[in-house]
Length: 254
Image 1 (cartoon, rainbow, N blue to C red):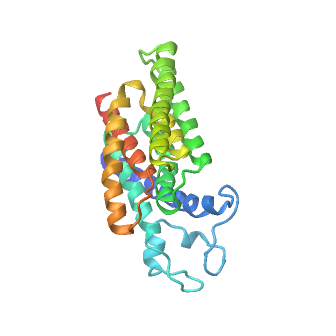
Image 2: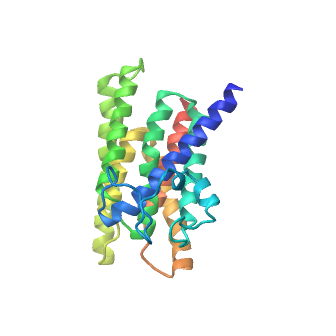
């Protein structure tokens, strides 16, 4: 019974975080505030009430349309909410309902927003990257303050110094490739995310992150070229998938 309640709780939390993520995805590229303004229908500008904002269910009940103007609402909204719930359940399966899990829950909507925004606009907004970094630093304090065998200097070397190597390697690689190919080969937002991944994963996971993200980028580039018919592709999704996968793997070992 307790396990069932945990799963229901985590699923509902994931749906809510996914709904928050959809607001970030819409507002941040448009430079709109995501902290105080009420949600509105993007077609008719009517303010949305509680009945319109229930994750997934509002979309299903309304038949995928705005309750006010009857304009169709994209299926990507409930899809992102469901994906968020699934990711939260993955975190719960590895970490349980622990402080570590809730720290990762806090980062999930921002990671999802980064993933989708990079797909749509080919940017990794600084404010989202910074938030994930801050949450990662909070996690390091949690590790240090809760009886972990790592000392402060170990944490500094493993995570903070390691993060510098995470950023330095792709930056140098991108610089070299840019000079060789005579065109931009790696966005600076991607380099910043490498640094953030280092803060979360630590130095020991650097080779795995480089291999996974590089392999993922190659696969993604092939698919992007095939379906979108474009040479330039966003690197962020491969980075974020690799980061999240290694975070779960790290947790399973711990």
